[in-house]
Length: 146
Image: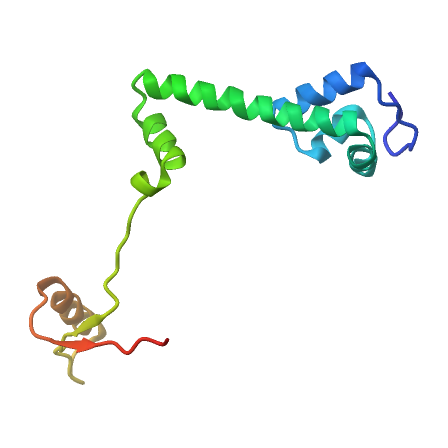
C-alpha cells in the first residue's frame, strides 16, 4: 500500500474488492481512505475518474443497505415492535408517519389572575392553574399571513 498522502495509487481487482467491502460496512470516503492508507483526495479522484472504483463504492453501499434492510425485515417479522414501527414509518410514510395537527385558525385567550401583590411563585402557580383548568377565555380568530 502507498504511504498516506502519496499520490501513487493503482486500482487493482484486490483494491476494488476491498473498497466494495468497506463501503458495504458503511464506511465514509474519509474512512475508506484511512484504511487504504491514502489521502482522501486520492479516493475522491479515483471515484471521479475510474468507473470501476466508483461502481465498487456504489455497489458496496447498495449491498450494505440491502443487508440492513433484510435484517430489519427479519427483526420486524420476528416480533420486534421497534423494528416494525421503524419499517412501517419508512416504507409507508403516508399511512404511518407521526401526525401532529395543530389548529391554527383560532386561539383561546384565557385571563390569568395575577396582581402586583403576588410573589413570583404565586403568579406562576396562578398561570399554571389557568392553563390546567382551562377556565374562562374567549376564542379569537387568528389572522394568517397569506
